[in-house]
Length: 347
Image 1: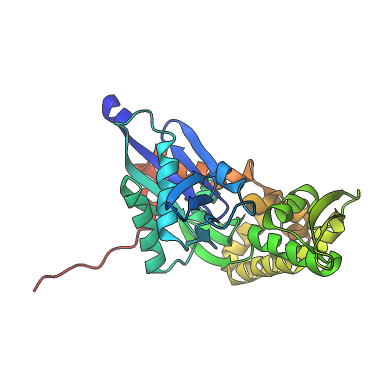
Image 2: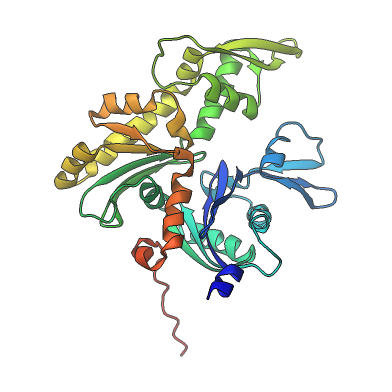
């Protein structure tokens, strides 16, 4: 059996809008790179994926197309997603004989049947023999160490690149949930718009993300932080540099943050009374890249009156949850989200 385990690998795939992570059984996380691909439209040849492709964003000639094939957690470019996934799956292979027997894929809540099928097909075409789907908040809560299989509430807020998933989980299933298309990418768009309106400066997405990470905050900070951002002056068309402060970023993303806070309110309001008591006792856990925004836990705690904690290594929560399921598949089978397929009757 050891020989077969070396050849046929089980993996967990967190195919995110911003980053893709792959967990391999008994090895841990073997791929953690941006969900970006660069293709030469003249030759139809993929030039780079992951980190190398992200460096090209906004810096390429017209015949090179740098794409993010997933938008709001959903595949928008099927062929590029498949190609990107195939490249990622080739990296951790020990040898040419290695193949992938079973793949667990994390998906946002409430995907349509067509969107589910596109995710499954992308993984199957990329080289996986069998694909199982898992709801992303379930995997995140498992990775964060929450007691999701117990008859008590686990409230997880997973703020990724394309979506923010908020879910109350009990007995291995989602009781109440919300999915917003308001997350890291929307924050970047808010900062780009703010720079345009406030400073008359045109900046790109990488610059906006840099400002968000460097000085972004959800609440006023004791210290004033400033970072220089460079772009094109909208009046003269020439390069210009301005200083963006933490209060600028906070003002820019305030409406998006309010939408997330309001959705957390709605989820708690819709939660059954007994589970609401559990939420107060157990608290809220934040994960995903958005959890790293300064003061977001304090903002949520102030608005909800519930203790909020940030998960350890929030960026890898989903991948680590998938990893637990991959390492002991039979014990976590009830957490899978593959709906029963209708029977085909041949008359």
